[in-house]
Image (cartoon, rainbow, N blue to C red; front, side, top):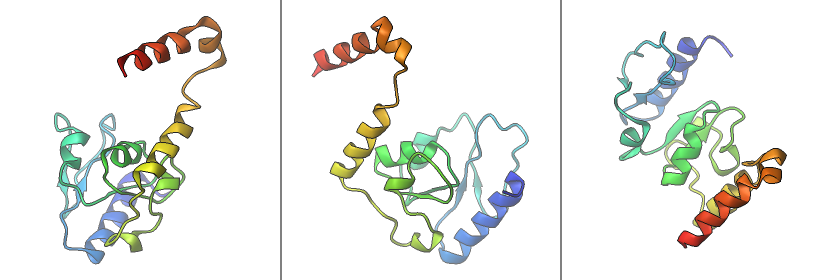
Length: 140
């Protein structure tokens, strides 16, 4: 990829050409060198991703886990690179007007597959995984 700011400018320009919707540019909060991109709303802490997604049409990213948060919250994502949510997202800006919206069944299947990778062998051996999962199961 080109440097992150140039990439953000390129993608936001592409979004602006395709739609008249407000583009909220939210770089990774830990990126101290992030700068605003012309024509966008620059979102930074203390505003949260959850606040920005409340009325979002779609979330566009290269590969951020923010796409997973969006999918969980019912906000469709467009994932342009490799990312954990790619399989339940659109993969082209051409889908902006009608982004792929996975069904609840597909989201559940995807989240279940993600959960398979949540625990390490050591956490299984120590009983930590079972302790956590049994506590969660008791709540339901």
